[in-house]
Amino acid sequence: MEGEVVLLDFWPSMFGMRTRIALAEKQIKYEYREEDLRNKSALLLQMNPVHKKIPVLIHNGKPICESLIQVQYIDEVWNDRAPLLPPNPYQRATARFWADFVDKKIYDLGGKLWRTKGEEQEAAKKELIECLKLLEGQLGDNPYFGGKDFGFLDVALVPFYCWFYTYEKFGRFSIEAECPKLIAWAKRCMQKESVAKSLADQEKIYDFVLHLKKALGIE
Amino acid sequence: MEDEVVLLDFWPSSFAMRVKIALGEKGIKYECKQEDLFNKSPLLLQMNPIHQKIPVLIHNGNPISESLIILQYIDKVWNHKSPLLPSDPYRRSQSVFWADYIDKKMYGIVRRIWMGKEDQEEAKEELMQCLKTLEGELGDKLYFGGESIGLVDVALVPFTTWFYTCERCGDFSIEAGCPKLVAWAKRCKENYQSVSDALPHPHQIYDYVLQLKKKLELA
Image (tube, rainbow over the protein chains, first blue to last red):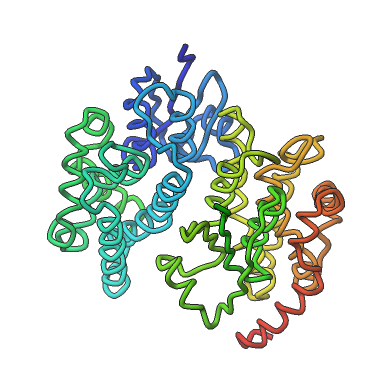
């Protein structure tokens, strides 16, 4: 039996999208609760007192924090369908390594593209393209990072796809021109209902960032 | 066929100590290769081209990088004894959460303390907050893992060998603020040979930092 599943989330968050995708892949019914990050709910502060961040997955009243930890948890509990991590320990370690690479690099570099200008922005753009190319290299000739099946690293990276439009507009470049195979992979993932339903609309993300920049007083 | 296990190491690194403890707990024979981080070996650059950091575990020629990923790999492959992670998915998610918390906090804070720049006071406060939070998680248990050491104990205990250095550089007492945590660290070293073998003497770390500061012209 599923139990009660609640997700505390914020619609533009790539991290929340990972968990949404994993829940959808496993066809788990859950309650989605939108958080206002300028006015965090008592529930969020209670369920994630350490980091006070979303997403928070609450399963039968018990919280699990950090998106990659949530995806692994979901994979382990609902292990009878749509496996995300491979059974082989070395392949698991490799998937985890690259998901960790995404965590260490993509979010901050992408953020610099819309938060900064001039040299800092150019440097971030250059590094982001390098990182995306490295990830593209990992794909090889496979349809997914998980091989012939959609897996853990696909879940970890694909949410950033809806932010690419924002990165491209601020950075004045085309990710598809630099990494055509990666964009082909992302479009392939978008054919999956779990991904299409979990990712935000890219234009809405761009509008959100425009508003956020104004609110933060960033030119 | 016997396993070939090599560890690319740097003796003062808390991250490398984690791996040594895990290998010790599992009774795995391995070759330890000391790296000079100012003059990295071709093997290190080949085995971890992305981050070019230690520790790197090389198992039958296959490299695994990032200490927490290495620990989980070791736990899965050598699952015959001394489990580092619980079998219950929820408890496992909590162990990984706290290990991730330690990863997010400890290295940066400790570095800011021994570097001794304008942010040292702030770093000292953050250290005490962080350790108090961890003390809360430990509660009345002997170890974070319960009756025996687990992932969180292995993730944290190496940093305790840097406490003396923090105290000397920051002119404060960690034991005064966090007696339970210091007692826990002592317990780990006294009851687990894998821990006492892996951790250098705190004075050795201090000597290393003094030399490093000279080299970086921070003395």
